[in-house]
Image (cartoon, rainbow, N blue to C red; front, side, top):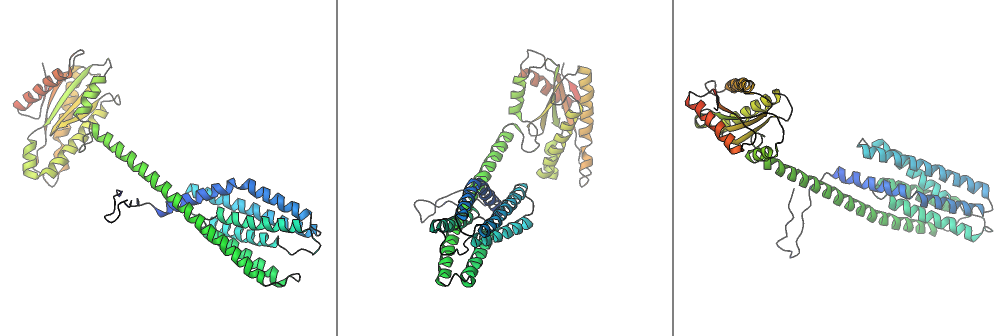
Length: 392
């Protein structure tokens, strides 16, 4: 994510855009457009009612009613195509066929709207004719603005409307004023320019929405990562020392408790001989063994493992007596001693751990129990390493 910073030549500052997926911007723009189209249904029904009222006042009601029925069929087809497109957009499925169906619907919309401008006899009520013409122009404008995020569909409607209107002007015997073609062209160009401006506004709003969403997601990820690092060791993923004191402070179970201090033997020699990269791999492999061993103890969540720093680990186990815990600790020591098999490039590497075990008595402070388990661990090292010692 780029961080906004002021330009050297601008005292106000220019904010750099957050890189986002252009397809997401288009998706949000189309969703917003289709929601607006759905909300415009009452307006469309009012327009249909006004045209029906105007048609009812004309001399040739039957013919114009047929044209109005075509317009109604086209309207229903457009609504179906728009609903299909919206479902596919929300489901993130391919839109190619749905776009084509909507373009076809918009072509029919343009044709049926233009046919409602069919020239009327001279004795037709002027108010009815003007009302139909006004409703048609308003409908073309509203549809163009509503579907501005899909310029091909808008162009399909305006193009079919222009062709149909020009055909009426050129070939209908009641018309002879060719200047009307210029008027229709200018009106449609004005509507197209206005629609283009609305489309840019939709895309700009969609881009801001997508950027804000991505910024929120990035911020949530950063906060989650910061929270993770506050109580996890970044190398091994085990709990850290801070988490140890937090967990033990809140421990309220009545189960028996044991602490195991686990210290890798001669780890500095591994780092010095094979490098810190190999040393890190040894620490990660050891952490994995300890984590799997804790899970194998059962009682999910009852046993927790920590990395206290360097090559030192700690396990906080619940619900075992001393004999069971000693046996389990021996199993853990044996698994750590087998880790050398994971480093075939260094067959001579020696990995083992000394483990100090103690029972953490109820009412006793953590520091006292830790001191005993550490002492037992040092005793294990003093007696040859790679062994388990229980504190007295």
